[in-house]
Image 1 (cartoon, rainbow, N blue to C red):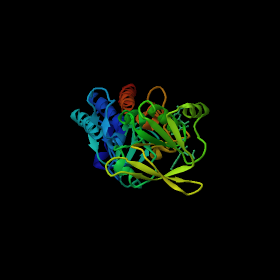
Image 2: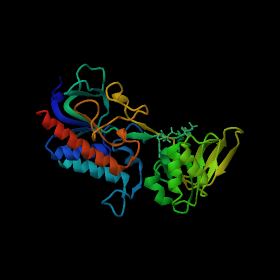
Image 3: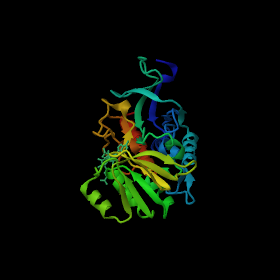
Image 4: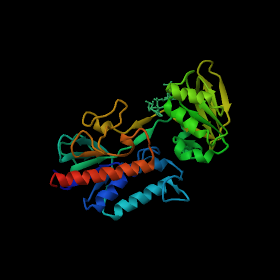
Length: 322
Ligand code: NAP
């Protein structure tokens, strides 16, 4: 076992609002947590989670004038460090959750000994919004292009905007956005919505919602902010321009749970299953934030569940005589 593989009380995997809040709480409980924050591998994959891809955050309590997403996350991080959290900038490559102390590898996953062992593990690896795969998405995300109507709808008062997708998320986002926007065009690649009947009925009945059926997005225009998009008709191949100043992509999310397949119970959709707060099926392993929440997906709910996981871990360690 290498020198740094002495047994930690708690290792937190992931550094969004959930992971950093659990770090603040476990650090203040003198558990000397190690948080493995990930490392940048692309503009859409970096420590700090989804708020790193956001511009202004206006709904995080305590910031009445709003705060930029990356600045908010750097303040979470600063607070976690202040109470003694060790933060490692690396990606976890493998875990062994068969029994406490659990094994956590960074770097080469084939080495027999884990890089670290921990009595308890908190999983806060988050989720990613699926994107369309257009090169301009990374440039325009947070500048008219969004994946969260609850977060950004307010900025589109009286705008003509579009929502891409045909499931319940797209329907829900479109309906929510009608509170602000002048018109919302739902762009869907087929001619019927996948969304549940009640949601379909609601969007069909809403006079602010228009439909671009059988349409895929070929381009989103604008240098510094969204100015429109090019749609391609899936039947005729014809292209047309849609003049919108906001685009919400709502084609689903993917939880970051690859590391845990076969070790933690997952829903069919890939989300971690938690019960009684943050407990997973493995004693001593806790989960919080978007990796186990496909309903609320907000920074504040993730932070709240990070606090729950920290308290659950602390109580578990105490009850188990650690
Ligand atoms: P979803 O049900 O998987 O729907 C994704 C939608 O995006 C589909 O309409 C799909 O088109 C479209 N899509 C996927 N990839 C695309 C691409 N590359 N380009 C263009 N369109 C693409 O995802 P979701 O709407 O996020 O819902 C996930 C789950 O959460 C579902 O079980 C849903 O019922 C649930 N949910 C429930 C509620 C609620 O009850 N209020 C709200 C939100 C979500 P196709 O239809 O052609 O496949």
